[in-house]
Image (tube, rainbow, N blue to C red; front, side, top):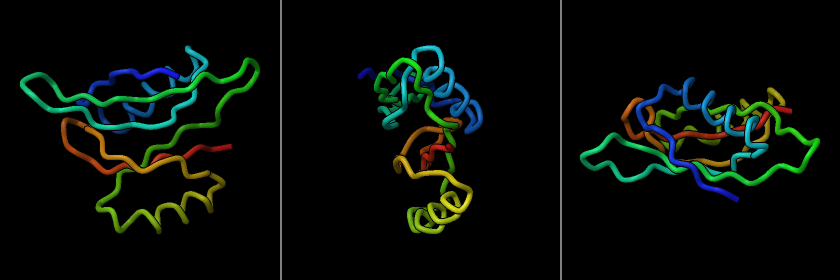
Length: 107
């Protein structure tokens, strides 16, 4: 298992792509995401990964920004309807703003 520091200035698309590259290059699977402290430096997030066994690849990672926490139930149902499984709910920095995210994995 490993923890990586990821910029909090990235757009949602850039964050998803960055985490996807970490998964592919390092043979990891994302377990969680958490916002770091925002001090005088740029905001950042902590991404937690676990090693993926050789020959196994995780499905597509999908991050969805939520307007508020009450949207999580409807978002989970919508994404499951598209064949994705729910991974986690997190607060993270996206474009330097605190953002509620739901993470899903495609098959």
